[in-house]
Structure formats: structure tokens, C-alpha cells
Length: 391
View (cartoon, rainbow, N blue to C red):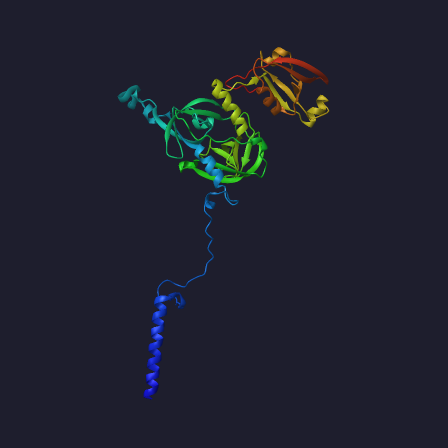
């Protein structure tokens, strides 16, 4: 019995010694029990391999980081303020109050703040934004993504397209690269960059949902890019860029019953914005052609009544007295079918063609009058401001 006890003691001593050595030198060889150390059970996970040097900053198929890195420095926040009148309380019109205070009880004034976004389009300090962002503002401040704050002045604006151009006294600003809005396709990826609700620069993504949206009653000249990239208050005037970070549109409006984004955002094509911007920078305003007529679309019933034979052209249903159209001999009921050889399909075509002709130019109008073809020359006038309803 004593011998067995000695063998047991020696065996236990050897085992404890081995355990001590293993736990000291190779603890990972020992099994762990949940709860003993408080660390819980160990779970085997798969870890991404370390990217090779330089790979973390390179382009990736699952990211638009490079597009954002290229475009975001050119998108600024715009803060505006203006003085507005606040009507006084009607009780102050009481004769008793006026007896003591007299005419000093006029309307109060206070400053109203506005918020929007803008896009640096020139390193010399020119910034594109929306007309409605800066309209009537008497103080405009822009904030760049790197924290700089600069006072801006309005170079000019165009309410008909909702485009405005600002200028700041700064050089070497990061100007955005213009892309080709004409080559956009429905389904293309686009990113909206701006300062929604004043929370700071934000990027949202979506696709081009539709092109050439018109008839929305937002602007006189409409050719909107529709996107489902989230656009909210404060995004107006910001950049819509393609997947390579090139500017394809100026975010302008949303269609919403709630005031927030429901996936129907509208942007002015970059090509239209660029054309307007160049005129504003050159002359301070936008000059457009005008002939002074009101137009009506041709319906099947009208086409049959006028014996037109095709649903093409625009019926003249209004003529401004003394306008270029009036002087050229155009009469009510004439159907305008072509201008300088450009075929007219509807009233929108007339608006787009005529406004693109320089005032003072002579243009050839092809019309149908009582079923007969007619050719008239008209000297294009300058589109009035405030804008006339007739085109």
C-alpha cells in the first residue's frame, strides 16, 4: 500500500510539473473553459488579409471613394441672411396704444437666415449655385470643406433656369471638373454632394431615374435630370457627379409631399448651367431671344380641324402688340412648323430655339396658314424682364 501511494505521489508531482511548464511556455496548448477567466468562449473568425502597401487608397469596385475625394473639395456650404419685415400685432393699431406710442409702432424687422450649397467652378473664385438660394440676400458667406469662411458677392443670376454665379476673393480654389451631362443614361450611378439641413457636407448615392423632365412648373426652362439620390433642404446648389467625380448637374429641387426626400430629386444639367454661367460672367446677365407669341400644342382634334395632317408644330394663339411677330405679319391661328430649318414639334421646341437666338438676328419662320405653306422673316427681339408669358 505504501508503495502504491509513493507511485501516485510521484506521478501527480510529475503531472503538476508538466502542467506548470506547459502553462508557462505554451499556454495555447491548454483548453479553456468559459467563465473561468471571464473572457467567454473563443470564437474562430475569418479576418481580411492585410492589403498590400498602397492598396487601401486605390480604386475599389465596391466604393465611390475616389469620386468623392475628387469632387467633394469643390462643394461648399452657403449661408445667407436678409432683413425681412415682421407685421406688428393688430392690437397695436388700437387708438389707446397709438395715443401713447404714436407712429413708432411700425413693422418690426429681423434677419432671416438661409442655407444652401454651391460648387467651385473656377480656381479664380467663381461658384455656381441656385438663384433661389441667394435671391434677395444682402449677406452671403461660403464655407469650404477645409473650414475656410469667405464672403461672396452675386455676379449675376438667372431666375428662368434657377442658376446664380457667386464670386469670392480667393485664389487657387479646388475647381470641379465638368462632365458630359448629354451622355448620361437612365440607370447611371450618380452622387449628390451638399450640406443637407446644415449638418455638414454629406454624400448620397443613387441612379439617374429619368432625363429631360419638363412641365413641372418649377422653372421657365426645364430639362431636369431626375435621380433617387437623397436630396434635402440645404442640398440646393450642390453637385450631382458621376461615378468618376465629374460634375453632371446642379441639384435644384425635390418633389415631395413631406418636405423631405422621397426619392425624386431634380438637377439642372451641367451643360445648361455652364452656358448660363458663361453669359453671366461675360455680361452680368443672360440675354435670350423673343418673338412675342403665345403657343398651343396641337391635339388630334386641332390637327383635323386645321387640316394639318400631322401632330407637329405649335399653334399661335396670342401675339404681343408691337412684338417682332406682330411686325413680321404673323396672325392668330398660324401654325409654326420650323425656325431656321429646325423642325418644331411642340411649344417647348419654340421656346428652346427662339431663346437660343441672339436678339437682333433675322430668322426664317415656316408656317402653315389656312392649309397653305408660308415663309416669313422675323427680327428676333430681346426677352423682356420680368418675363412675359408669351414666347
